[in-house]
Length: 135
Ligand SMILES: [Mg+2]
Image 1 (cartoon, helix red, strand yellow):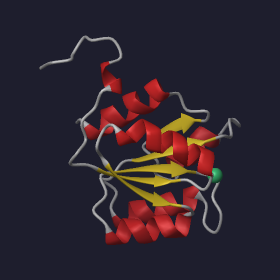
Image 2 (tube, protein in one colour):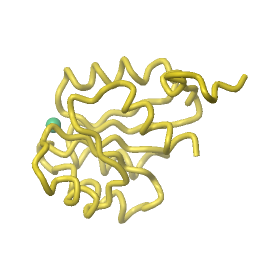
Image 3 (spheres, protein in one colour):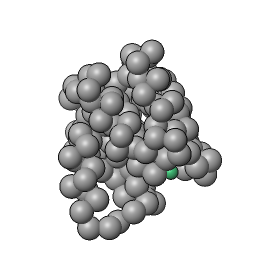
Image 4 (cartoon, protein in one colour):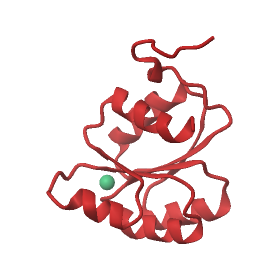
């Protein structure tokens, strides 16, 4: 069944074959991602800091990374650089609470493919993920 043209169709996604690495250190944000992504049936892997994200990326087949930028131990910029050095074809979507000017540029410079400002709206999250996972 085609859902093209249906309003909010991006909210209904089937990603049972996909593996998404969510890098996030704050529990309330994890709850949001878990609730948003669970119904897509994607496999969700979690990392709580940049170093753990790089380790998870090395040891798993990942289709997309949702990368918080403000992280302990190793920040999201450094982790994105390391991940892109390993495999630059895997999309990294940055998510940040900071809305300072220049951050978007700093983020793209680190190799991020896209950028989401917190608080993230469900529709924007799903639209952005669809752009990379459904292509
Ligand atoms: Mg954080």
